[in-house]
Amino acid sequence: MDRGGKLIVFSAPSGSGKTTIVRHLLKQEVLNLAFSISATSREPRDHEKDGADYYFMSLKEFKQHIKNGDFLEWEEVYRDSFYGTLKSEVERLWAEGKNVIFDIDVVGGLRIKKKFPKETLAVFVKPPSVDELKIRLKKRKTESDEKINMRIAKASIEMATAPQFDRIILNDDLEKALKEAEALVAEHIAKNPTEDSHERA
Ligand code: 5GP
Image (tube, rainbow, N blue to C red; front, side, top):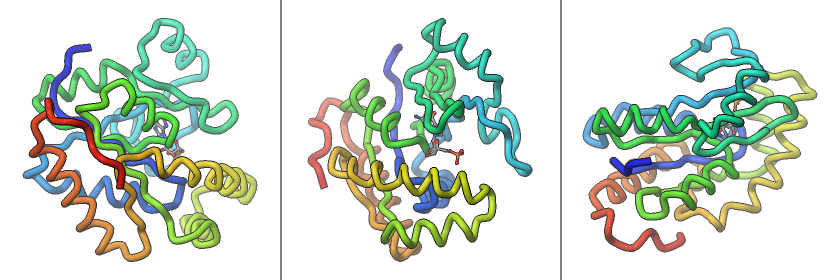
């Protein structure tokens, strides 16, 4: 793949607030960001639109893309729920002259960092605690209790990967987290791509 703009990865346990942060960043025109729409085999939620939130596809279709080598990274995030970043998606956004922002799981996030170490800023969004995460997921009411428990179990494992990221944002105060995210991304975008990649936080 040809290299283009910068890559900004936001990874975190489900319910930590990373999607809110990513949406906020996308509104900041100076950052010139575009959202990388992932492919997934999970069912769309009520408000979700194909080609905007995700490229929704069947498990069979997803597996065919894996076979074809179409993914930059992919992951079976939950059993039978596959998620992945299509190479064509990043190429599309780079061709538009954009910096690309990803809202993806920790394994996928670290894979992108490994493939594009200089271009990528990998940020881990840390919820105040796993208990707080549970409360947030319950409030959101988008998943069944069983799915919530699955996400909580995964969260503890994901929390342990935080030190591998370039930066960690603690989301105990949303306003503060938004400002911090803006500053980190602006700094990364201003950086010359030939400079060394980020020091760890
Ligand atoms: P949700 O089902 O709540 O939309 O997403 C579940 C998890 O999958 C989240 O942690 C989300 O960040 C992650 N995810 C979304 N897209 C991708 C992707 O393209 N690759 C990987 N590895 N994970 C993704």
